[in-house]
Image (cartoon, rainbow, N blue to C red):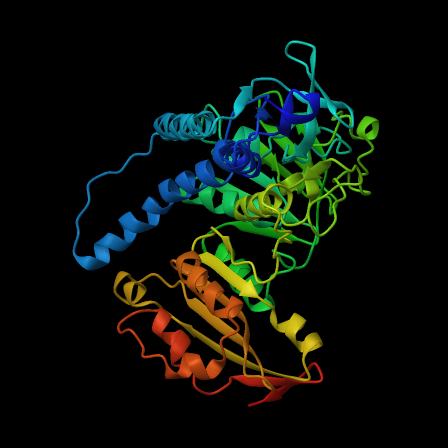
Length: 466
């Protein structure tokens, strides 16, 4: 029985990773919890994001692996790729994971409400599937985000986003992708690896704005070497459908691009549209995201928000972390702020990017003197296979404290390595600890502990040779 005469102690809107974690943990503490989800449990990550994306990344890597095998003495027969089989296998895995999410919610004692839920007042929620209004002592907004449909673009209705890319009936022979963020980069490599002709159009000079410049340069050069056409400082201004069911993208530069599909990967938007935030006194920022304080509390006394709907850091582990902090703060009596510093991040390009902490330019602004330890090399596997891909590893060090404040990798399995480097940066380890650590040979990661001398220094933001 809920307290205070409400139907629920807590009602969560959104069945993604953050909402599910908050609902499960709160219900396990003995509170009456409801969780409303209009579509499928798992949210962006499981249904239309991280999980299906990573499965497609795996599929797209086999073309390189088959080619590399020849250098190691393998003779392979003719290979053939079946797009519908990949999509079917991906769908089966998502169904399995979704069932686990729902089962975990039920096992914790929370009630599943299969409906879109909107706010009617600070304590009232309307379930649109039944047009029923329920009440809750507290409400948690965890409705996530959605792909930006770019409605201002003439012909945007002819384009796909990452949502539709997971459900195409056929593999496009050619595709134009607009965007330079991680979603655009990852899908460019996926379609390239599966055999599509890929053109990436980006308005900036270099892809992956906000990442370390060495990573950006290395990635962009690698994409071009793989046959991905990269058109920077340009954008799509119109998309037309042609008579043969193909499409033509008109670029600002005047270039015309014909393709089987045009994909928009121009950011994501918080799911606050028609959520009723104004009725409940929940303030939004200029981008439509829910405003929250350091403890994820909104402007309404009894309403909290977490995950992509707040537009803080759009990553699944962040939403889960924020959910745990919410439960600690509200239901365990231990106010806890989400710690959003030094978050390890990966871009599943091919090869991968893994990064944590400050970029070189950020460190140059934060510290009087910075040491940069940098190396590039061909991984051992590539020397035999003949592949020209190079690995980049880089440590950013505050010279005064000797603390490693940033670590950046472009190369195979970068994400796996950077997860551990995240512990090092978060733990404020110094470069001296790295130097005292024994190398594991032969491995690519041993380079991280054998970079004894700085490649160069930055003093007052200016580069100085070491």
